[in-house]
Image (cartoon, rainbow, N blue to C red; front, side, top):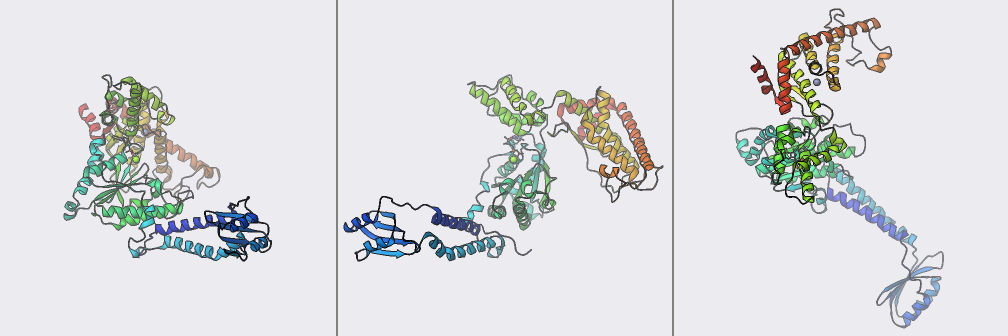
Length: 611
Ligand code: ADP
Ligand code: MG
Ligand code: ZN
């Protein structure tokens, strides 16, 4: 691709203005009522001429009929009036010592005369619009002067954000991870000299309000470099070409000011997987995305520009954006755990006088699932109430009231989790984690969390990335099923009732068990045969009813029976292991209830103590 698309914003704007101007002109000519003076007549004109008041007269006549419009220029003003008969008016004017003219031009005629000009103007406008999308970069940064600032102005540049890592609470690991970026921005040469490669683009991924923007600003504040920001939703523009032009200008600015940070908020608005948009502004987005990719590829690794982008959904991003040399580093910014929430509360109450009865740790405990923004909001709400009631200190009651007020909002309500729910989640996740650890073919535990994710899931247990094994053994598959079952089994061992929280686990376990039989031939009874629906597809309900199954009803029943056998075996194995380790199950759940998020190492300590 040798010709980069470089929309000339100035041209585009001029074209739009021109068209608007012309349309306005035509409107005026055709429809705007002429301001005629109904009191003025030929007689009055005669008088004014006698009195030497008239400077000039212009008579516009419509040829077909005798009427006309007379424009009289007096010394102090202009008057327009209708005459019933142009010939009569002409008689008054003839031989007098004043300038006059007769035009046989009605409004329609005027427009007719203007046609060639309009035509040429329209052609010109179209030509300019064409230029806009085809102009190439051969002329350098041309086209960004004057009116083209239109495309430029949206990127905000805050020379100094004034925000530091101290303002970002609770995201210790994330800050640690990003501190090398800060160091690089402070002194890019240090890294260049030794040949170290610093990523150009980093994606900050996490739910809204968790501090992604704050973190980006803090990086620029810590490194003391300029911060350029733009939001993906700004790109969703009316005019094609504007988004791309903005991206280009943003990077032009950044290059002039490097080292610096370019922050693209809501990147999913532009960088959504191609071909998934539902019409409307699609081309625009694609153009903008292409321009972004061109820009990212266009500057070198260590030029001192770090592009940070925020999104809450990496999975919907166009894979092109995640390629090496683009956004190839990801930092997860999750909802805070108890400790994090307490730290955030501390930051936001620093300048607010708190009453003695306020216990931030207690508030942190009762706000599981709250994001940093939610907490900030909570404290602010309490402060407003305190101020309104003209009190000097924020009390526990103010915070409780604020909590209720915010918690009542339908969406937030789901985030406030009861102690009971937390307890169930703690046992559930512990069940998974213990099996992860004790089953020898499974990976070690990396983190366990019972921080609600706001969309129903009560927590997660994340293993270390698996060792890239190409094949899974039969044992490993069986153990995988047992791990999936661990959550539900742990619940059933502790509580009288079980919950719906395991539906995903059940799905996972069944699908692995089924594939063992139908895909991998692990069943001795069914043997070395594939019973898949065809081309690797799962059999789906509609087809199952039809005659698409490549095997008989008898075989289907046999498959079900084999799957059931696997499931039963795994269930009793997993249950046995958890029962034998019930002490650890309790300890692990307690630890989770206390911390909400537990690292693999902390979890493993539970086993040491036991021995
Ligand atoms: P995001 O960009 O992830 O949606 P923001 O960075 O815009 O979230 O956060 C919004 C506000 O919430 C911040 O301005 C700050 O007041 C508060 N906030 C969020 N996370 C934190 C945090 N970790 N520490 C302190 N304040 C936070
Ligand atoms: Mg933000
Ligand atoms: Zn589970």
